[in-house]
Length: 332
Image (cartoon, rainbow, N blue to C red):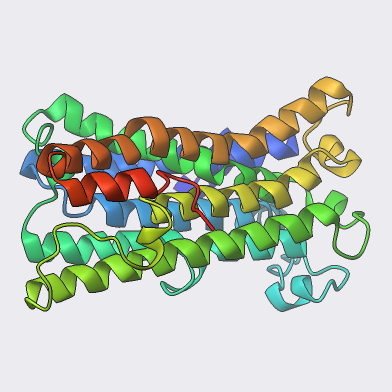
């Protein structure tokens, strides 16, 4: 028995929804654990953010293709004809028998797209280049020499990936036969969700590029500014964080519209009552809620605000910028 067959057999739960959901979540912790071991031993965070991008990609792909992989493995064991892999283009076109729902393809593409589009590719590749150039990342200065704390950072990232991807993984875990019964066309939750995603991603990418350009110009001695107050950074003190929270809200809105529907409830193995729909809503809402909490209360805004307050808190221009610029939600 091969390793793949063993793993498929071990996760062959009676509930089809769990057959995909649990392995996809487990993969996040497996990848982070494998990257953590050499990183902790070398006391290096060089691959931390890059491994986060890899985890996003791997978990999404597994959730998208694991049902077909199971079906093909079962057919091979019986000597039967293997089913075809899902058709991405056919799914987007709404063709019957394509194997996927268009929402699965679109939301998965939000994570799998090229670096110009996908948020976490941008962040991962940007920070990898920055660490390679600078030699270290100041976020890890206080934990790099402590193996338990440094290891905890990797497993915290696995949890972060899991909660962020939960709406997408949950949607991808619904049986294709049930998703094919969804009404044709685009629902209101699809429209709202896609608009939020595109708007949030555009906001974050623009903010990151503006800061990257500002840092480059400072190194080139084009300006001597100590903090960025131009562009989107004049509308919000943390426009990149606002964009990130918004894009995950958009993803959750599209997925949540399906998870709380009758089709989604049956696919999750629930009765479809108030409790089941609340569970579907929580699985979708956990992503933006966690991201927003993390950014506002833990690792995003507080660290940045404290850092700059200590450096420039006694300066009038800095105080004026803080006074006139909202912390999170941009001003018009």
